[in-house]
Amino acid sequence: MEMPERFERLIVMNTTIATGVSPGKGFETWKQFNRSQPDLDIAALMKRASPILSDAEANAYAAPFPDETYKAGVRRFPELV
Image (cartoon, rainbow, N blue to C red; front, side, top):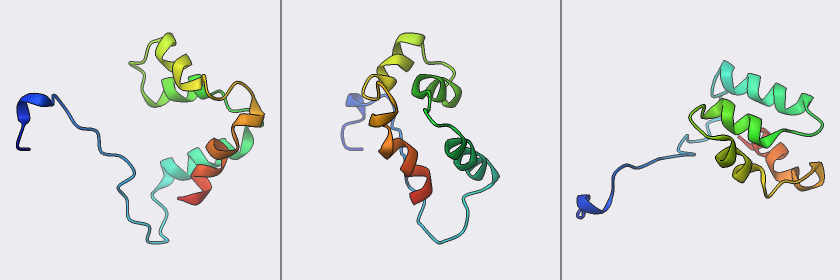
């Protein structure tokens, strides 16, 4: 805040305090979808979450996860929330 000329915007993520209460129907739907996919399509998931992403940008998000053996963390994350 002391240097506003250095920043155009700020993205704040993962700020919900865990209370044991569901974050809502949308999140529960995401968890069910995640459980139903043996090999999550990360690029498609990112484009759904942020439709303004280009194919190249979505593929960059997917690059660290070339196949299902790399996706244990991605698949586990929703269950931790």
